Image (cartoon, rainbow, N blue to C red; front, side, top):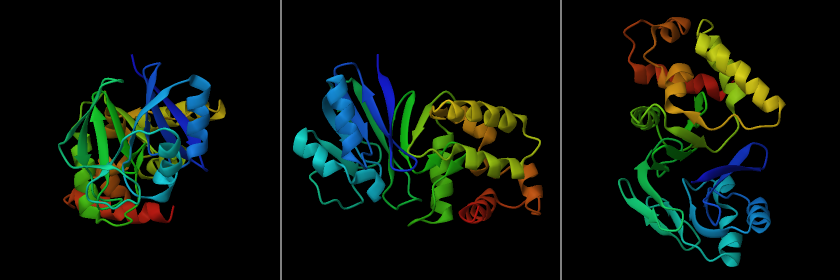
Length: 251
């Protein structure tokens, strides 16, 4: 049985460590130090490293890690990297024999143009595309690209566990509640997250089902959200999404 541990890094990053008690797979190691400490403390053998995109807080620990633990690095085929890696593209299947993971690559342009996610039901590792009650900034892609990427994730099973890369949930919930103050699922989620964060625990993983009920960036067809933005009811969801993303940039 697989265990998925969050390794906190920097101000609000999570490096995900997937393990079966003997071998480990690490997702987006922006900092090698905490990963090395975790591997040494647990005695786990590093089987592979998974990269979702090229932002420094997701990759800067890779070189040190592979110099200490020779392991394959999987990274987006549409991005360039200075370290040895195996480029992977949409629809490819990565089979990791030690942990038993069979990960399908999903291309999700938006935050960056080459951004990918790794999906092995019920686990989704989606980097900076979908956040708990939020989504990534548009560093390279367009609103249309990010909207389509999020719609693709929305089609995954409702019980899919979403492991994103940042602890932004409380801020995202505050933004969402301004748009949908009558959404009881949001109020319930906020109370749950306050308890978790007060106890020093991560708010993640979330699920696709929970995001569909609470995440404004997956709810851009909501009449309530359109009305809160003073938009016509027939405003296209992608246009609502674009407006929401611009608003969130300054929130």
